[in-house]
Image (cartoon, rainbow, N blue to C red; front, side):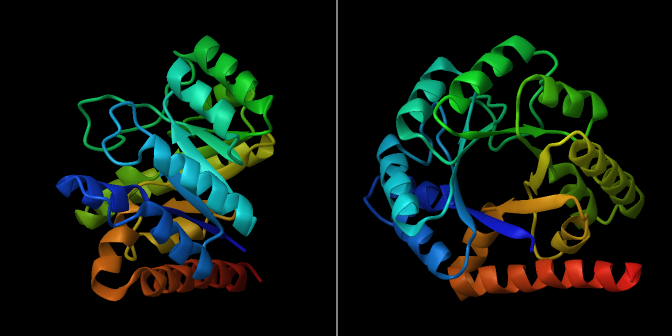
Length: 254
């Protein structure tokens, strides 16, 4: 089955907007896990705009107690590597990060940052973290990820989702084909394949239907939808769409 990782960053965004102690990201994580999430994702940014160091400690403890993975998204910096080495998360996803960006704007340039990324990957693997690199579905970046020692790649789906929502069918179809080819190449090279960024109800099925993808990480949309229907209900509908996409693909190939 295709796994669903729930990113709870933007619960912290709401909390921090008022400088209060609530809503608590760890409570959102508890709800998500109780509703069937396969793991929790949290991005500790350099500027601490949403998730805090204290959140990471609480989330680490919660995931250990529940026997579920914490996917710690992080920039490739000495500070973040040091925090991850202490927290020992199940997974560490290395992502590009610029202070001025609103959200992650693209994939990590593994070729350009090869030495730095390989060093961080090696250090993280010493404490048992599964290292994932958040990249574009570019064959050059995928091969560089293998050379850097990553075990997983997470393909950036933001451009596809944007094109689909804007009604640019030709652009969306072209990006989707790149995602399919990238996922197939990554799997052939021995990498586990994840995908994430910008996924909502309208865009999830074509991505979920890609057979090599083992996990989707979804956050902003689910937290936004939870305001209206509740987090378990938002997750349930997303899971139904994910599972339907896989079933439809199997029936089409049978």
